Image (cartoon, rainbow, N blue to C red; front, side):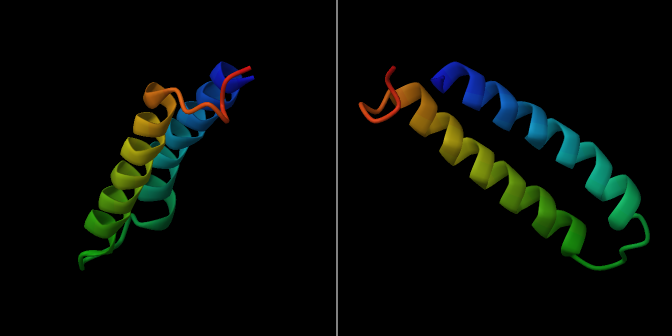
Length: 60
């Protein structure tokens, strides 16, 4: 269950990282594109650390 959840999460992040900048943030002239990448990277980094740590609540 843990591995499948992380796989789905990673695919979602990959999809968001390509679709949002090219569809929604294409015409941005300010720092919103940078802020999107920063937030997405920090959230993915945090989730990956939790996944790799192997918290007891995630173990199947």
